[in-house]
Image (cartoon, rainbow, N blue to C red; front, side, top):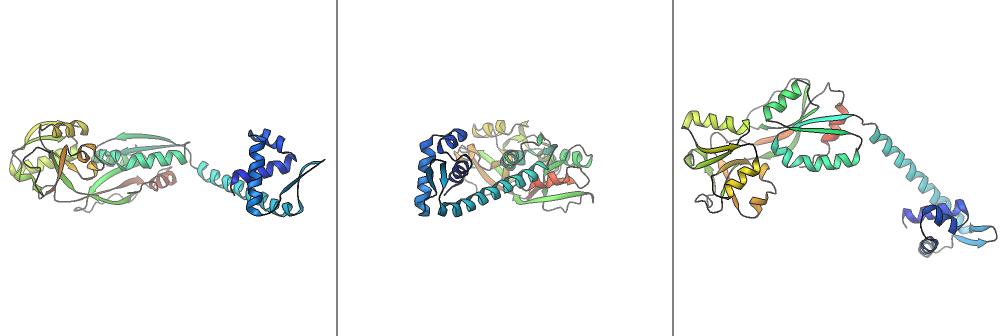
Length: 299
């Protein structure tokens, strides 16, 4: 039994004709006849009989058809209830995100959200972690997707709420498969500082490198780029090595094909894990919509 068969029954009851029902439902008469026959065999009851007055329910069929109509009515009520719930969310959702979340969690969450709420306009921007937090504090966006250190207890203003994705990431050195470092089990930045680096040029990594260089001297940096694909391609070709969070290497084609190797990084200044989540102002008019969107993040 399926809803298509139940709809056929309803239409035959209302029109008293399989041919008219077929025309109204834009299917062939044989399709309706065969479908109802299969259902009759499943129930072990004849539902309709032909007469001079049309195709009418049998006495036994009337009992079953009454239940069928009740099921369809409840299904319509459920559809209306769902539509009422989803249509209560209106407007636009402005989101700023750090690259690591943009590349991993966000696409899947956004696709599912847009399928359920096509009426909501979503605009995205990619920013540095610090810039995302500033945009939330300045009420320029509805939701900020960020990464924070688990070694520091972050204190946001009371009106800012943090929604954790319950996910952490570590740091890694990525090297070419032909690099002399490729077989290392773990590395520290101070031990590889003389190797050529191609740096992912976001403020987060640059600030960490500046902290390192103040204590241990300059790294051998070939170039910086804000394009992660350029960095990975350069590493694969042996131009240099680089630093990435484990999240940014999730499902990475360079890593999966073996063209680059990821090695855990320990020690100063990257001896901490990253926590991921969303921040938003409790005072935003889109408060409920923001919370609904965050429900779509499965990590």
